[in-house]
Image (tube, rainbow, N blue to C red; front, top):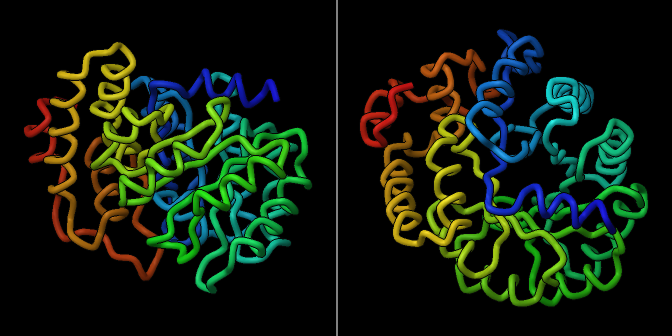
Length: 302
């Protein structure tokens, strides 16, 4: 599919932030007026695209209506200037297909589908699920979001081999696994013409070196600069610089508030001038600020 090839080229050697979702004072609904501020904040810092409604975006905590409205607002903001990857995963096939067909109709560059969560599923059931969702949007690239530490279900190399053989519009993986050996096995299995986006920030350079095309990063929605620099350095073949930046990223990750990652990311954005609001309850915000020590650590002024 030409759309997959084009998307791979646009995302290669770059970072696609998993965009935080601005939330209004009700604590539960999308704050549409803030979305353009966040999109501009990221666009001017050299990101390659945006991943909407994922984990960092608290997508599964939003209403179906707000998930659709968020995507439409982002698409209006970017107006085709860079690709939007829309997370459409729901805990029922019906909801996932509803979100996927909406995203395809509105012009998302790809839909991204997390594995069904909470209840364990075998590979046969998951293959049937992904086939049904992909068939509902046959002209749109479909990526799968592999994060078994949060979703319970994960994509094994054996399942990946079946998916790429059975689903014509399958575009690749967004993989946030923590085990680099499993990541290696998935990369070894996936065809070279498909897209592989690393989601584990602490081992991003290792994933890139093993063949990942680029990154989707949650923290980069608030601090995109080092992730843009890391992927660019790797793309230019400057491994010494890439290692130096990876080390700084890992030091930065250690500064996140324990157990309050999404809240910490939103606090960082607030401190950087983007009023994204708080996390959706019952998730908590951190008690104090984060940006002052982080920016000194990274040598950033803004």
